[in-house]
Image (cartoon, rainbow, N blue to C red; front, side):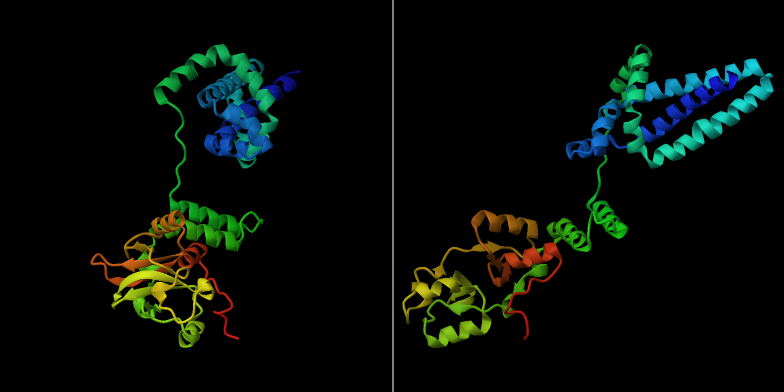
Length: 320
């Protein structure tokens, strides 16, 4: 009978100690996210874990009570010094080290399976623990969420990809990294400079020679200038040239020429430019300096390539 009582007390100590470390190794906000995503164990544990101070006082009170009872009980069986040595050894090894080591590695799984036991213990000790938890809530407030920097998120994604369990693959890691970085990238870093941009005079006529020149480049849009090449006045849409009359000037093209276009500055960030393109239904923007000089162009494709960290190649980019 003495062994049975001792075993029950050690088991109680192990449960309270292990559950304390296990539950509080779980971030309450992470549990909430997992619960919203349908994780069954998180759905069970989250209602307990979000009552942080009440759960803490319950488990600590239970742990102290069981350990004290074990020491007193062993003291009634053997001499004081020996009882203290036995109680300390049993609590240290079986009541603390082993359960905490085991529960910390499988906190969510163990916590969900032992949730009914925890609920009963919270109900039994509620008259004592509630006032203490209430004061702690008022003094300390709610638990603060864990905030991660972009660099930390990128590192976590890299670690998940390195684990290789299929949750995140190399392509997903690359895209996440690009999405988190592109808002710090400026237009100047990815734009096509003016010396590489094909532009046409607004008085250029739509003839065979012009069509032949277009076929050499195969772009979908071209800036159109008036007078000096710094003076961009519109965009030419090559897909709409088929519906135009022959031998007209570009500025007279009703469908292919559009005098409305988006302008951005070289210091603008890509997230800002992307938002402008989506809002204005534009796939290309003219880059102007503060003095309104033409510096180059940036296309939606350039921004997408920066996000996915990979060049987008079509049939015209491939050398056969």
